[in-house]
Length: 100
Image 1 (tube, one colour):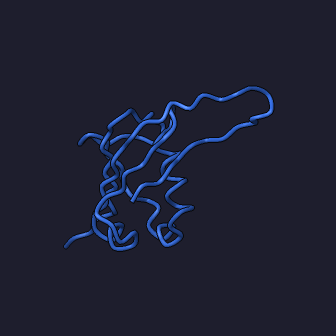
Image 2: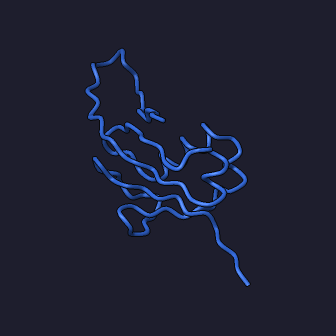
Image 3: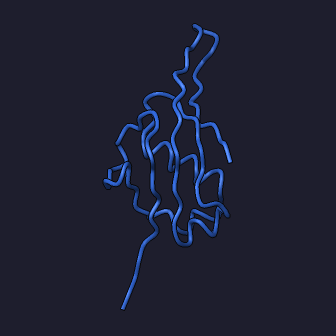
């Protein structure tokens, strides 16, 4: 599945040149079940943050809102919401885990 996550600003003031980057989003547990995919291939604009990505996914997949507290790792390292994604990043969405 290919989605585009591009921020759009006022096009009347000046032309906007988008730097489009490719990322892969890996899905685990209940998140994989909700989206019904193991992974997503996305094209994103330069300077897209994890927060931007999360906001897009929550809008695109309403059922994710019940599990919006998932953790995010990029290239096997946990990151915060301000992390700026780079071309060819691999993003893992990890749902909350409970055990006993």
